[in-house]
Amino acid sequence: MDFGSNYEIARTADFIHSRSFTRVALQFPDAYLKDSVKIVRALKDKLKSLIDTQAVGSNGKEVGLFIMADTTYGSCCVDEVAAAHIDADCVIHYGHTCLSPTSTLPAFFVFGKAPITVTSFVDKLTKYTSTVDKPILVLYGLEYAHSIPLVKEVLLEALRSCESTSKRELLFADVVSSITNPSQENSNSSGLVGVSGGDFAKENSCALDSSYITGGLTWNLPVGHKMEDYLLVWIGSDNSAFANVVLTYNGCETVRYDAEGDQLMTDVSQKQRVLKRRYYLVEKAKDANIVGILVGTLGVEIVTCFLLQQYAAGYLHMIHQMKELITRAGKKAYTLIMGRPNPAKLANFPECDVFIYVSCAQTALLDSKDFLAPVITPFEASLAFNRGRQWTGEYVMEFRDLINALPVETAEQSKEARFSFIKGGYVEDIDLEETENREEDEEGSLALVSAAEKALQLQDRKPGPIIKGAAKSGAEFFMSRSYQGLEMHSNGSSPEPYFLGRKGKASGYEGENRKQ
Picture: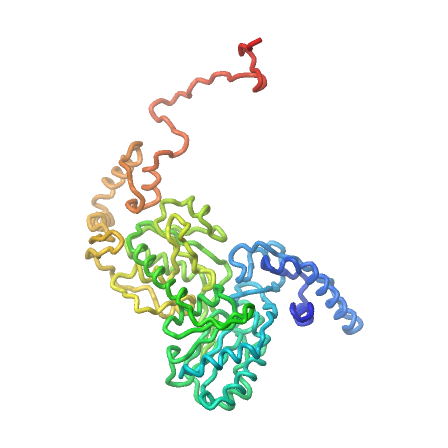
């Protein structure tokens, strides 16, 4: 495949030129940086030709192209923070993406075009499905979207030629859009790359009931059908997008076609084991007293349009919801913004017993085995901090689904002790005595006494040791540290006397006895 077609130079230049953008940010993942200079040159040449061929007398301004690398957060999200530093009019995003709608800038997505052997894939899939009596739903990595029309055509023909699968139902997902505009719904007319319409839609003209969106893909199921009824076929690599699909639809039978290795992987049990690990983290989070909320994005806005109903929300709504949930559970919450989290960064906050990572669905799952404290998703936090809520096996990754399906409960949290599977005994999440004192303090009768108690506690320079997980706030944890910075003596007001240090070089200071 030639260079211009792979990186969609013509479509990208037309998008920039048609909207009269003059400052364009080009966002590249690490794998695409080697081609970034060539892409910029190709875009400049194409834009120059478009300007030269436009109508005489028009004002064709030169377009500034800026390469962005080392993104602030995950490379799958549009980095609007870095784009704002150069005052960009839009962002051209290259490579793998979660297609999260932007909040301030329009974006154009170039997925790339990964090669796939269509005939080999169809042969392997038809051989496998001959022993499976289920309808088929084909999902894929966005880098294979260019090949899906051909895959659909060849696969339909192969299924019809086989007597056992001639009447098999076959669905393909659509790409939501390759263009997104801030605070506007993504319409199919602006760059839809999907393939589920056309002849196949006419042949299967049954009514559609349920609509789904996951990882930039959208599809509809017929009336009366559920996701568990379908065999999920994933075309692509074992990446975060595939993990999102497996966890979200963990009740479905799933197979994966590795286009690079030309193999149909039928055993995805390693992904199912991730669910066990996530459930363990939920149980561990229940015993936390101090919770850190990690802001993993500044540009995720949720915009959906199903049956002409629009709903918009974003990361701020989710952060406020998490704060309210944590506070109601009797725990302390801190909000942290630090870009991409890693063990070294989070180690600066040892007082936090658990972290909640608020980010897009494809970067939310962090393998926190190397971290000092577990890192969980907002859905897992809803399970951990809502008393009485049981995990049914459902797993929610998208903000949109989480806000709709798991609202913060308005009922008061239960004050009964609960059983901790981590500690192996009953624990109380809320200090009943502290709660009663707080209620009395609000009435004003013990306000002065409470203030005096807190002042005396702060003056105690030798508090008892507090183990991790027992502190109720960051200040309480800090007071228990053995090192708290420079020691300040409050007994005397006069400064300490100073003295002169040594003079000279390290090889021989003045006044130092030297051996001859």
